[in-house]
Image (cartoon, rainbow, N blue to C red; front, side):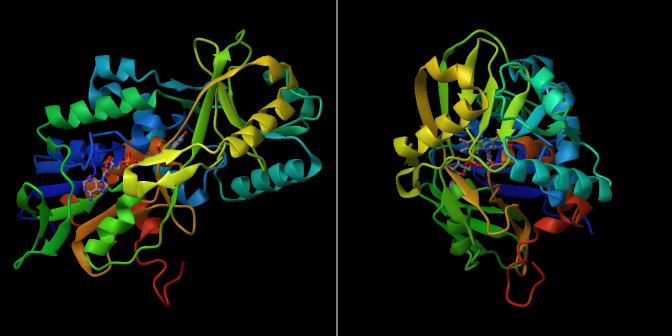
Length: 381
Ligand SMILES: Cc1cc2nc3c(=O)[nH]c(=O)nc-3n(C[C@H](O)[C@H](O)[C@H](O)COP(=O)(O)OP(=O)(O)OC[C@H]3O[C@@H](n4cnc5c(N)ncnc54)[C@H](O)[C@@H]3O)c2cc1C
């Protein structure tokens, strides 16, 4: 059933909020986004920019495949000049490196499982294949998995591109404006309370990122979320030697070489989150584990100096996939958060499928795994 009231309020002007706003505004809706800071200030701008089908949870596969299509055709969404600025590099591939027998057997089972599910994006790599794709890799590498279509993009530029595209399509962004309260409006829709006044809309979408559960709590809804602070570091420039993005299987390893030669290293090392102060901190002892994992894979990098480290705030759900859907018993209040470190890649398809659901009045089938009720007592997780 299509809605009469085509106005949406969105809390959070990160990538998810701006992507949903873009698709809704293009469908003719009146959209207002609120952000307590500057739009795009948090996870959306500081992430690693990975565009990855490799090792993706199979429940995210349809959404991730659709997102990949959007990244490949980004000019259609944000315009040619903005798309160019996003430095989308697909087809450089991502490789999950097996550095011991246990990781190699896991890679073999993973390849079999994905083939059984007919999700054939990942290929098993032999020791020789890994060696020829990754010159300089440690003699300990036994093989791995590759997803050849994968790649990366520039997260700050992409966040800016989505923000500008949604505004060009007619969405309004109110920055430095924290939503402090939510209430349903008699006859349908929701009201938000901000320091500058109240606003009403037919639907309310919570894209609050690491603060998503706090926003849900304002509506009396308890959604389980842990705040984490994924950390990154970048080295000085070294001679170009690496095309693919390399990730670990059971160790904190994720790195790529930028166009200018520096290595950008991540890999799930967590810092100290301080969401109440809108910030997070790297923990140096933990960063050394990430550096050690990189050296285990590529010993020749021992002399590359680390120039800078940073972290960002992200929400993590108990089962590793986000909440995307209406809140329990509130068809006009949607939650879209808890991306567990995978949300940059997914964002164009999240925007499209959420907007499609709101416009058509029926849940897009790709969103079925992400229901907000899945941890409720008696629900099938
Ligand atoms: C270091 C790091 C590396 C990562 N690497 C990758 C990667 O390689 N690939 C990938 O796919 N993903 C990656 N991610 C994850 C990705 O960045 C996130 O999943 C994604 O950016 C989430 O987007 P978002 O819009 O939900 O969140 P955010 O960008 O955090 O936006 C949420 C917004 O909500 C606002 N907000 C919250 N509460 C309120 C309120 N009450 N009122 C008003 N505004 C509010 C916040 O100010 C914030 O701007 C990484 C994340 C980090 C931190």
